Amino acid sequence: MDKDTQADDALVDPISAQPHFHRTESQIAIAGHPIHAMLVAFPIALTMCTLGADAFYWWTGDVFWARAALWASGMAFIFGLLAGLSGTVELLLVPGIRARAASWTHFVIAVMLLSILGANWGYRLGVGYEDAVLPWGLLLSAFAAGFTAITGWHGGKLVFDYHIGTSSTGKG
Image (cartoon, rainbow, N blue to C red; front, side, top):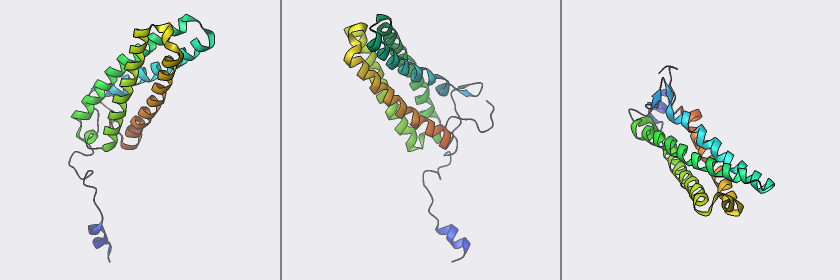
């Protein structure tokens, strides 16, 4: 078999053969910087802060940490909604993002994370921030931190492996 015949017999991925598969540049950006990428740092950091504040409350018994966890969990949820909104718009607008199964996996896991963040904040609001920490608030915070790691790993895979939401030219 010669090389030309081998090339003709090669398998072709039908997804990557789509016309806009390689169009993955961000459509929701400010001066070329994707808004989703800028916003996701906040819910990630605030989720970890909630877990840390819960742990400090458990360790010290200082009410300050329970109140800090309430605020951190609420802001993690609100910033998560904003990051999720911008990410969803990117998913729906950019054909190269929409075509990849990994994008949908990240989306589904992120929606589940938002549910956990909302439950954590809602529980603290309903029960009272001090009473909510032990044991359920701490467990919800640990669960949210684990889900944040999984969601972030999938999001990072999209950026580093597939160059999703990046600019190939380095300009806006």
